[in-house]
Image (tube, rainbow, N blue to C red; front, side, top):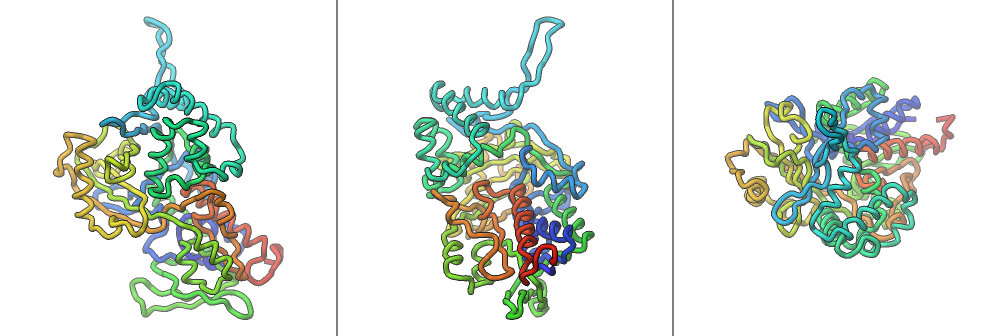
Length: 469
């Protein structure tokens, strides 16, 4: 088969890898000048590593991407690190994870330091969090442990909102202190509509150590591009798709342009197409999809992401990698000091801090300039560290995407369109379809594998069996 893949993110590149392994021809069209999608990076002249536009890391539980990393021979470039996570509370950061590293056992010369298991350290940190009474903390910890280690079937959980479920089982105080700030920060006005399966999946997949690549995620993406090219796939950059037409005798005609030369138009025919972009892009390229499938797409709501990254001359926090910020006190959701996970030496000595938020695409942050957002965000950095001065800022970068976080209401599984669209040979694989899991690079790999195998099993767009294909 000859397959076009629209989008050079990790899902699209993984699909190309799976198709090429099976002996088929794949062409990946990417509108940007580099692959990677939301995991792509940018680079300052003084840095050894590129940095992700939107903060990224892996969990030890991310088996799909870890398997792919090993498969393409990039395993030695991935390492996992202990880090400190905190919640801003009562005027300062309160450690939630990573605070206690050793137990001291014995006395005198026989005294030894025994490493504390990460789960124990985190449990002690949560139990010690002073935002609610001890019994409520213990109750919340017990329920969270039940969800993470004992619950395997998420489907009953999606029948209730996370707000309803956690209020009932964790208690009102735990909901107000922990759950609601997470939901409100992530989903804004949709916070109390999000179903419990999403929160379960978030607890299920989180680990106590975080993974990162030498050369950043862009380094991994570039290695994956090189690998699929060696397997025979084509990856074409700077080539947005301007039209997609179903051929009467079977297959699809794809028309692409050159972003740097709109007059350079290319048309090519394929047996099948995998589109990996947003619901809006699919609707634009395939408006003749049946109304019921289009209706499912139109029911998929999502939020965008706005991230301002600043390069500082001094560290901002005392070793905290990730800090959740209350939305009623700060102008952003998350403060991530990347160089508390990775050594600043890889970034020319810069201390790199992300200030990020998930917002509706109509929010003013999508229109404000970088300078205007700096004016709003920098006073918050002084609250985090009173010694901070604007002169600490060496440089800054602003990145925005309108399609970044799917919204998942009650019984959301009914809203998820199938990977195979009703149009023969057209497949759609987007972050909206990784549910109940939260979007991320691991589930992008899993999605790319799934859509490639489904296409192969169906024979693609010309009705071939898998053996014939």
